[in-house]
Image (cartoon, rainbow, N blue to C red):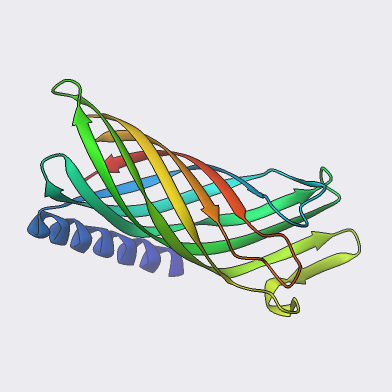
Length: 193
């Protein structure tokens, strides 16, 4: 019953957002796909990439000509693997991007676009898996749930379908003297309503 209610609520929200996007003169894009997560910077020795997912609902609004601004909601992860599976850290987070971009039509059905801007994110849940037990992020001392940084994306469009590559680079430390600079590479498939 809970799953049915969630599906109905999701369909209602998506339908309402689609109507609002059409009224506002913008474009609503549902995206989802693969994410590669890691950290760069201080205290990252032995840290390797951790594969995961990312889904989002974007809203593009035209500014002038082919130039647009973009915002939305992205749900995904940030994290890392330590020395190839000795331990793993994964946090599930919510991100709000704000970017400006340009979309250029190559033919009547094919277009390319690029955007650049920033994002703000907050970790909602997650844990550090280690051989001696798991630690939830709520139980970690001095854990910093919020992150912000830059976002750069490129995409190819075929009619309403989109294949998108996005690079995200956060700047916040996870905890005092901990890894800083979350790096995410996202490859997503999208559909514009």
